[in-house]
Length: 347
Image (cartoon, rainbow, N blue to C red):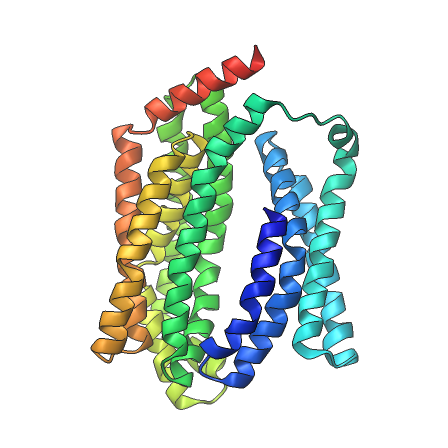
C-alpha cells in the first residue's frame, strides 16, 4: 500500500498546479507532494508499528518516536529553508527525514520481535477485514475534504487563506480528541478481548467527558477572542481578518461535536464495529460537505463560509449517528465476532 500511495502521489502531483487559484501556489504544492509521497511507505510502516504498541498498552514509545521525528524535522527545516534556500522542497525533505527518524526510533527497540515476525493467513485476513473498512473510510473522507479544498481554491484568495488559517486553529481543539480516541480504542479492544463488554459504555462516556470538556473550553476562548485571534493571524489584513472571524464563528457550531465524532469512531473501532463507522463516515462526508459547499458557497455566493457550514452539518450528523450506535449497543455483534475470531486464531 505504501508503494501504491507513492505512485499515486507522483501521478497526482503535476495536476495540483491546475487546481489552485494561483499557478505559483499550485507549483509549490506539486513540488511538495512529489517529495512527500516518497515517504508513504515509511509512514505506513510506522503507523502499523505504532498501533501494535498501542495495542500492547505502550503509548510512551510512539510518543518518544514522534518527538524525535519532529525534532529532526524542525532542525532540518532551519537548515534547508533559510539556510540553504531550498524553500518548499527543503520543507518536504525535512519532513521526509523526520518520518524516517520516527520510524527508526520506534522500530529499533522492537527489532527482536520484528525478526521473529511471521504472517499467518488467518491473521492477515483478520487484519484486512478490520483495516479495509477503516482505510476506505479515510480515503473517501479525505477525498470529500479534498473536493471542499478544491472548491475553496476556486473562490477568492482571501477565502483560501482564511480556510487554511482557521483550519489550523481548529486543530488545536480536536487533536487531543484523537489521542483520546486512540486510548479509547485500546481500552475498548482490551475489554472486548476480556469479554467485559459492560466496560465499553463506561470507557466511551469518560473519554467523551474529557474530550467535550476540553473542546468546550476552546469554544469559549474562540467565542470571546475570535476577532483578536483572527486579527493576529491575518497580520494586519482587515479583509482576511474579517473572513477568518466568520469561519471561527462557524466552527463554534461543531467544536464539541467534532471531539465527540472522533472519540466515538475510536470506541467503535476498538469494538471492531468498523463497517458501520465506515458506512456512516463515507455517507455523511459525501452527502453533506461537497454538495453543500457547492450550494452554499458557490451557488448562493457565501464563499468559504458556505463550505464550512456544510462541514459543520457533516460533523454534527456523524457524531449523532455514532453515539446512537454506542448507546444502543449496535456494536455488540461485531465485538462478539471479534472474540470468536481471536479465539480461533489462538487455537
